[in-house]
Image (tube, rainbow, N blue to C red):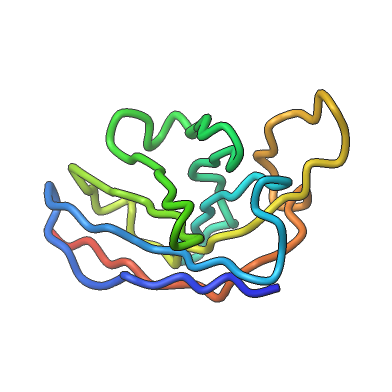
Length: 127
């Protein structure tokens, strides 16, 4: 199993950045894929998640309306389009995968609900 996040860098406040997560080694249709972030001196925070098989997304209130998750089935890749960036978005961003364990499995939003993690990619937003 491998999750490879990329696309981080420096952006201006109000600007945009797009992160990518390449997934391999597991059946994507049986998983949710999500994004978390950890800012300086902060705990890891849920950003958003996508149910791979249906494309349904769910976001934290702090990014709703600014960030969007999408997927590319052909490339086995997930994306995080970040618009209208704020200084508070500065963090290391991680992609993760949660296996759907049963019918009616609730949308995962907590880090301990995710089974696989990629390395992070750093995003710095400056004023």
